[in-house]
Length: 574
Image: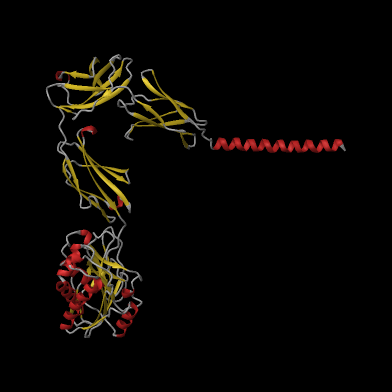
């Protein structure tokens, strides 16, 4: 019995040993496939063999180290890489008094990286050259170089290099180094002053330029400078940059360099194609003009802009009401996108770029179905709009629905009371003008509600239901006019477009792009323009009543505004 028990234990031990060995083999194999990097840290900065070295406590499984050095301004001043944990910082240049931040990454054979446990900060107390006001040296008085952090008990040497050849050297005995002009007068271009310790360890360098043409100040401009724009080509205008032998345009997306483009120095206008840009990103465009690749004496200028989404081409509206129109009436087609090309068909088929291109007004001689759409560069094509024209006559019926918001106050100092009062006064002007010209007009009652108004409008079979309001913003700084319809294919598109564009022509701030708010789409959110509730409806926001300039315009120009709107309606239904 004991013998059988011992045999069982032996088998179990053997199986357990196999499992443990297999598990250890598995762990070892996994570590071979993906060597795990160990924790590590930077230990010290030392000097030897005429150079500085960064000493790193090794990371397990690391095959390479990457070093980035930043000054106290956060600017990266030096980078290097090494397969050794004692990393040479040959030719690293730093300024006296800087607190240098060393960031080190370890990398394994699979390119997986790990950062050192903590950043290493080192106070740099070696002397350095003081920046001069100008790097150009075109005077006969000689060159004065000044040192910061000079230590009298140490020996330093300055050397001048031209095209990698030493042309002058001198022991330093003070923090002011004078070099006679005759030592550099025969050269043209970049001369590098290098500061060495006694053992010839390089401490600092400084480039200056002698007998070198000075690059002229450069100015970069664009219609989108310091604003936002839709996804589109960016057009730049360039001035200055005299004597430059090369221009480079740097494109930064969200502060990261995305592209560098070489431009001919005689370029006056340059266009960045939209396909080089991404939607909804901040961009900085920096133009740099250099002479002979001398970056330090280059001239730069930048513009910033936000590139928004790719927009739709505005849909096509018609100049006259298609429901009933006189025979032989000329109808104009229009897209609010200025550079749009309009295509159309008259046989009920969907238009394509192979369809007839709109060039001149269409003469309506009989009942017909007009289908249209518009295309433009760097925009999506517009929706297809359908207009069923019928020859005939009818007295138009217009339903006016001014606001009943009596607690929505405006800028009282310019005479604007509340939205209900002011919009009812404006609606009366429109009503009188329309009635003078034989139009049947109904107007809502301020004690009613939207459901009652819509019901009444449908009952009288209105051709156009027009809600009249004024706008407001959270900042009291917004301005402009806007008209809402349900969607781009709504029947109300044409009359709304006509009202908007005619009214905007007399708006006092029409030259300010931000006030051109245009036609907007409610997509079912506004009852008085909803295609499911009303035959043809639009809602206008006649400027901003909480902005003093807009409110004043409404109050002082009520007759002009009302008559302008009425004339647009009369023209459309004529």
